[in-house]
Image 1 (cartoon, rainbow, N blue to C red):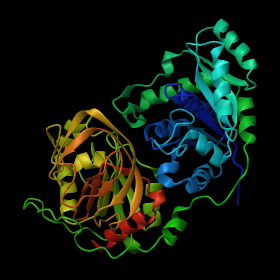
Image 2: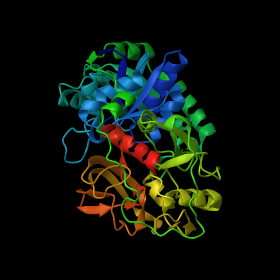
Image 3: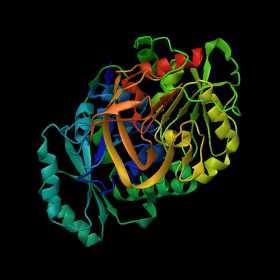
Image 4: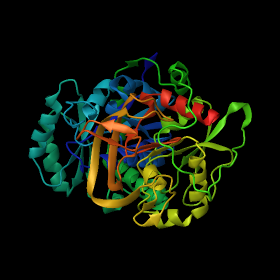
Length: 480
């Protein structure tokens, strides 16, 4: 199979240069021309893909060579870009920045090479003139395999400033494909973990994306950018397919009735029978809404391929789990922002606890861990785990090489997965009697909790790297 989707990688010398504004604006501008645009984001970030989805009307997808392996970058790209006229890939950090201590691994440059895609460098030109040529020359010549094929100048102050920048870049050999003036209306609010997600400000986010598109239309040569994208090299290989990878993954060992440490079941939380669904399907409820916005689209696709009916619910609004729920996935997000509202929804908190204490499989990552705790910043949560959670001044951030310590509904002990942590909260204690993961960096430690069917941890993982996780989870839904 040959993959020939026109594509661009939008990169920058450093974070804060305007990649998200330019990439999102390009996506929206091309989509407004009637093109089917496939949005992608290098790295583990969950928030930018939400803005990409708003700009294109398609699911924003991540391309992370650390979490998924280099061999899955092109197949995952092809899966997301199937049937599209153009793909726009937003980079992460600076062009050559990747996983700490791992060389080029997980960098935008590496992904661009794996996709054989031209790179457009977004440069914050607000405090420079002729020096911009030296900067661009350095990035364009650092790695001959990375094709830096154009520059978009951002935060340009005036017509005279633009003229000086263009004159300097004439000597670099890298064409200027856009020039964007300073524009406050495209700014998006941020807080302790980055931009505020689309789900929390949808109307304002629509306006912001519209402003980005208009700025890009006025300042960029869209025809030249599309021509550049069409010059991307062909890729060989098949697109990633959830059904195929689940079918080819090793069959999961038969789950046992109780995995890890068993928690006492409070008398006021009796087990309730979970109704059967047709054809052996089991409902897997996935938390969504404003408090739980972090998830990779491939997880739901893998669960569906493994035989689950995936139903989204909102813990801020829904007082019960979806009918027939046999398993629960609670990903990342911002429960710390919505702790009072989550706590006030007592009927749902009780329903989650009943499901967990009844032995159903529950996969909780980061925000999900906080939601399952006894309390979060003094607000009662679900009480599934006997831990207390609170906000912290310290940012925990980075990739993790993790090994499953305990057999769980997700994996057998010894299973190795790569993950990512990104939070400003702590839970005490940080690990249970049966920990979820052992991690090697930045220090060796165990973390997380395996308790009956619950697997709860701060570590975010990408199941495309281990599709057997979804198969094992759904099988546990059938037998619990």
